[in-house]
Structures are given as structure tokens and as C-alpha cells.
Image (tube, rainbow, N blue to C red; front, side, top):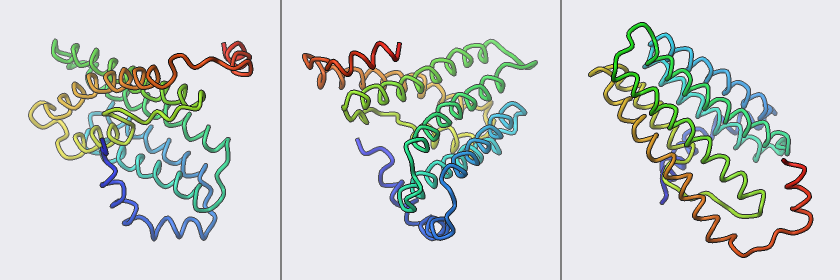
Amino acid sequence: MKGLEGLREAVYRIINPLTDWMVRNRVHPNALTTLGFFVTCLAALMFHQHHVRTAGFLVLLGGLFDIFDGRVARLSGLGSKFGAFYDSTLDRISETVVFLGLLSLYNDYRLELGDVGMIYLIMLAMAGSQMISYTRARAEAMGIDCRVGLMPRAERIVLIGSSALFFGESWDGLVLKGVILVLAVLTNLTAFQRIVWVWKNARGVPISEEQKVEEKVGR
């Protein structure tokens, strides 16, 4: 499943002039990662304050920074192992912060029975999103490429950001609620798909002695 590959390539073509400018001026990818993180935190604050459309715009802007940092790192030669670790770590924190902002949107003085259900759906979506990232990272640590599944990070950003930006709380926030329901289901399904993928590709493969030592240290 190609997902957003076509859209991603179109975005690359649009932002190439700005990317090239950043590369020429030696803008550090870690700085872009940090800026994107703060933009996403601001998005969470906007959800908390019920400025849903602004929050959606900021979620998408944070996703744009996520594209920039990776491309600048590759094209400028400024990328490093720490930079890759830093980017992945802040991505996980950023996504958690956005879901906490969504929780705050539904958990306030206007709380109704339907909103209580939304809180549980958001928690499921957040858990599924974290498991998607964890399963990929764990598989790659074993040398297995694990990019399969219906709902990787780019799709999650676009769904949350665009639904919040274009629809806000119109029709009692029905569109955003629908997106959260879809995420609650498909993120966990994607995590399960990745577990099955790794099972198919790693079953019967012995763990090397070096990996056994790493396993013990990791625990």
C-alpha cells in the first residue's frame, strides 16, 4: 500500500527551493527537529483551548518540519546517529503531546457521556501509534525492514491535522471524532500487521550471541 507516497513526492517538489536554501545556509537538521517539536506542543495547547482549526494547522506545520529535518539531514551531510535518535525520540513525544491535547479537548467542564467514550478512543489511538513506532524500531534493531501497515506516522499527521483544520468543531466535531475512531482501530491493526510481518520474517531465525548480550543489557 503506497499510502501518501504520491502526495509526499508532490510536497517534496513544492518545498525543494526552501530545502535547498536551508542546505546552502547550513541550517542544522536538529534545529528543525526542535522547532517542529515546539510547534506540535503549541498545537496541543490549541486543542486544550478549543482552537481546533489553529491546532490542525499547527499539526500539519509540525509535520512539515518533520519532512524538512530529514531531507536537510540527507542533503547537507549534517545528519548523525544522534540526530536520527533525537528526531525519532521527539517524534514519539510530539505525538503523545498531541493526543494529550485531544484528551484535554474532550475532558473539560463541558464533558458529556459521548465525550467520555472519546477519551477511551484517544487512549487507544495513542497506544496504537506508539506500538507502530515501537514494532518498527524493534524489528529494525534485528535487521528487519518493517514499514508495512495502513497507518504510519505521515498518515496520522495528515488525518488529525486536516480534519481539525478544515472542519474544527463543526457538526459537534463529528469529522474529528470520526478520524479518532479510525485511528483507534487502524493504528492497532497496523501494529498487529507489523507483529505478523516480523513473525513471518524472523520465525526460526536464531538470536546471535551478540544480540543475546544486547537483549540482557536492554532489559
